Length: 54
Image (cartoon, rainbow, N blue to C red; front, side, top):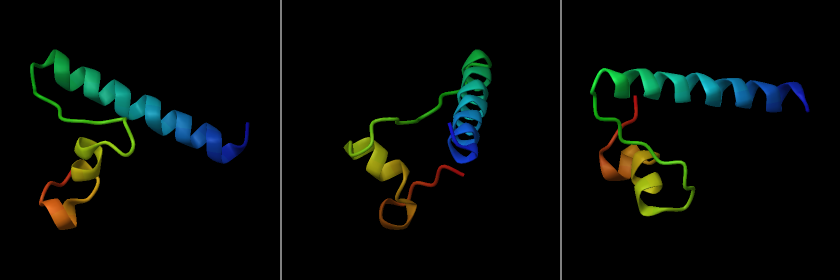
């Protein structure tokens, strides 16, 4: 595994943990891991859709 791949895995784990923490605080989290889905496209294209992940 390359350093880049390790970094991606670490970043993914970090954000998964952050989402779990938010869910435990009863916050609603809108996310999508299905690349190519309509929801994913909306979340990851804030310029066209007006939704920004932050």
